[in-house]
Image (cartoon, rainbow, N blue to C red; front, top):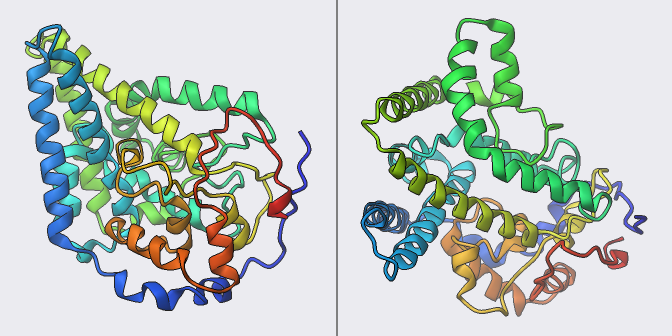
Length: 346
């Protein structure tokens, strides 16, 4: 499918952002208490709901299942905050999240360090963007890629940490391949992760990897010896797949996915993103941690999740070209189920 979108040569979006920056400068601080309380309540309620599922009757089972899915989804989405947040902004939160959520899901936080490339000018919408599929250019192939990736995610994570990771500790060529190709959350196989970025945490990521591998071995041993009943494994997987499919839907709503694969400007990146401010607060279930203000997040990736709505409200009533462009993203709730014109993005 042809598109009128053309790459923008000028990739410097600083002037564009500087026009809006004074409006949000006081919103940059991370509220540590909010992070700890929000995550603590979410993950705690998830574990309670999961424990109640096994003995639930036909009437209460859907209630506990829905509670488990949406609380785990919200808890897991904090990995996105970790990818943008300096570790010292909320002391101890990175470790707290990994111990209570990341490692049990075989999803340690270093797997999402690649998310930074989704925001990097010159990489957004290209093959080096791990979270972008060319829906408008290759709709059918993109849908299949997203669906297959969602279906196989639990198995791929288990193989990554139970087999490939430990084997790579002894085989140098395999180690490089594991870090570059199997140590990032990505929607497609073309992306190559940064080994330098993985090693930049001074051993912390290695400790997370070892802990996750030990946990994976423990799961296999417990299930194989029936210390962990397969019925519980099935319930856990059912909840995980509920989370994965909701996240797949959220992914489809986050952008227009009109890129042709060439580098674009920040203005183009913003116009390709969505803001769901007119559909009601219920969308917080499907797009937790203010992900419904996704265009705002692409404008100011370092803003904490609790500041995205206030920032959105300020810019919606602001003056200037940048604010006008941002307002065009508002109310956009167009899934990628049908390609559409991109003339206004050029």
